[in-house]
Amino acid sequence: MHERSSVGELAKQLRRELDRYSPGEKLPSSRALVERFRVSPVTVSRALAQLAAEGLVVTRPGAGAFRAQPHGRAAPAGDTAWQEVALSADTTADLVPRSVDASGVLVSLAAPSPGVIEFNGGYLHPSLQPERAMAAALSRAGRRPGAWGRPPMEGLPELREWFARSIGGAVTAAEVLITSGGQSALTTALRALAPPGAPVLVESPTYPGMLAIARAAGLRPVPVPVDADGVKPDLLADAFRASGARVFVCQPLFQNPTGAVLAPQRRGEVLRIAREAGAFVVEDDFVRRLVHEDAGPLPRPLAADDVDGVVVHVCSLTKATSPSFRVSALAARGPVLERLRAIQVVDTFFVPRPLQEAALELVGSPAWPRHLRAVSAALKVRRDAMTSALRARLPDLALPHIPSGGYHLWLRLPGGTGGTSEAFGPGGESALAAAALRAGVAITPGRPYFSAEPPAGHLRLSFAAVAGTGEIAEGVRRLRAACDEVFSAPDGRPAPGA
Figure 1 (cartoon, rainbow, N blue to C red):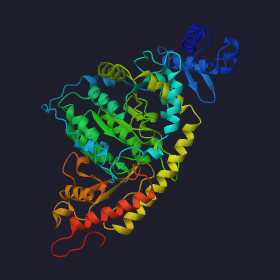
Figure 2 (cartoon, one colour):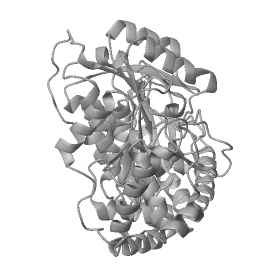
Figure 3 (cartoon, rainbow, N blue to C red):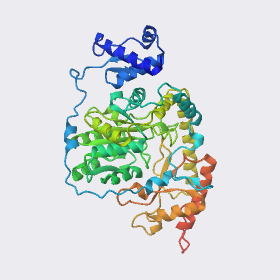
Figure 4 (cartoon, rainbow, N blue to C red):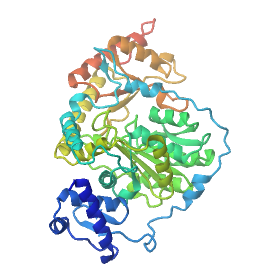
């Protein structure tokens, strides 16, 4: 019998027998089910994952599987009734023309010319990607029975279960949708949560791709400043009151571009402020798997501490694997989940099953934790190499925060808006980027990361898309040459760091 048929038959049998167990009672162990039904451990695992995705059982790593509490009698973990108001509220704002400006996204997607060092990349260099493990996973996935058939529209139950466990807290597989990359997931979330013309609160600075999504949907991004500890709660509350927004998009862990981590004392405040405003928090947890070796324990996703359905969580495998490995997840609870599901089905139908099967093979293989450890060590080495090179060659480019995760540094140019030289402010970024490209290094200007007027000129430099530390040192040398060209005034004023 094919594995898929075995999984379906076993799930059907277990579903019939659930009434034998009280809510919360433990089911027989996987080993007992293997022996009783004469199936493989993989078949048992997949059948239990299917029941978990249906909300019938709850699996706890190391403890086993338990019958889920009936929805009608279970004590509510939180109140999601407020979402009916938030999802149906009319907006009085004027409609915003829908326009698509992809320039901020294309900077990190466009391949540089031969010989140009890529300090603007948004993905791991091929030498850091798990190419062999991905190839092996795709090969094994392609041979799975039914691998080329139509998958469930919400995603494979086993993959939804894996993402639910990685998010943690009370998130279950039944609350997870598999999506095609983080960008697609963010697009679905914003379309589901805000009507055209509505304001949406965003961190300032923030990811240009998210700003492009918002504007393309006719939304009005409203900036909320961040500092070294993440978004400022008092300003977030002010922005909700002033704008009437029902959505706040944030990156609490290794924020793009600042690298900031939302401070522990601010996490609960952000959720409380959003809940009181009747608003959703879209949590873009994009680089949790690109933590550096010296980071220490990471805070849980906001979704893991959310009981009232405030958080719509987005996470992805892409950043830790390859730009073409576009497998991600949306997690939410309450009525909003069905709206997210409906929009995704209309937009994309489903994520191709072979890619989902390959994702399962990859994250379930011994190569996966080895890859994450190797990347963690390599990113720390590269970060330190770039930091040291910048301090030695360009000490006047301020580096206010050195992140312990992610793949980039955020630098502030000397001077700023209203300064003595426009070349030192936001207007000088384009000139510097052009000079850097002539010198043989591609950099990312800071202006696209701001939804309003920036306070100063900035650069974002990636250390993950290059071949190694030697290329980092050479890239910084070339960047210094570009600074000499742009910032040296006719009166002989020296460039930064001279």
